[in-house]
Length: 330
Image 1 (cartoon, rainbow, N blue to C red):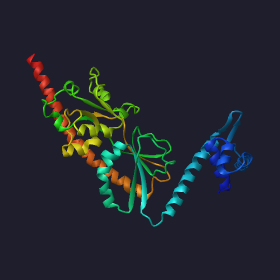
Image 2 (spheres, helix red, strand yellow):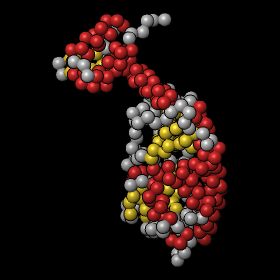
Image 3 (spheres, rainbow, N blue to C red):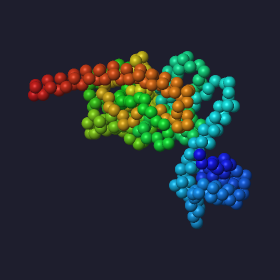
Image 4 (cartoon, rainbow, N blue to C red):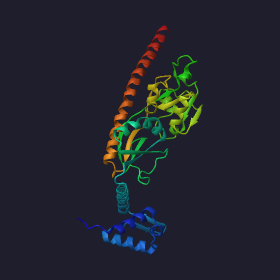
């Protein structure tokens, strides 16, 4: 086994690599710029490879330096987390989980009590944030991401797909005839999730739904806009209009009748849900328990989706039959 350099030297390098500055590293470590520079040079001599390119405009990591810095950051984060866990020895385990606010409020929170009853020794702390936050910097154990599934440097597992459909309050339809076409639907007040319109291609907005149904001709820009899906869904529950929603976020509402689908036509999203964790924590027992429970809960949504798919198939068959009858009459 190769002899490891002193941890202090490795830590000085990790700080300098983060700042790309010996002066800034010295300020953080309460050392002089010269002391940091000499320690880095000694480390390079010890391991036999250069870690920095010393350029006129500043420092840049070499390939070897970048690789070492990446591994050191993971190791330091793991050590810090372990020490924090030792400090909390004897206390209930704290599992920090982050996700979009809409996923937290519309999907996870209605189900979380079931997990708490099954595993009272695991305390889940929900970090609902619309940003894609740095899991290591924020000391996050697990993230539920709605995205394309490419999360470099992290363990990523798919656990739930999704579909889009229009939803509204039953009261919104009480004074109207039954909606039988996309044209009729888009004449109702539309509610928009602004986050979905600029999320990089999830196909979760009104325009994407219409395009996938072959109705690029229909306008859909009018109507109220909300910063995230949860607010748009809440507006639909309150009867303000028709929201374009992910089935996962409205499955409970469709089951209990607080929302209905005025036109049972769904389209696929380009994104799916993934469980994302730092490699150092991915196999931890508390994450494994919580992840297994999440997969179980996802099956419930899949059951609602299957029931809705059967309803959609019946509706499409009726449309096809009506269309064929109309053509025969012509």
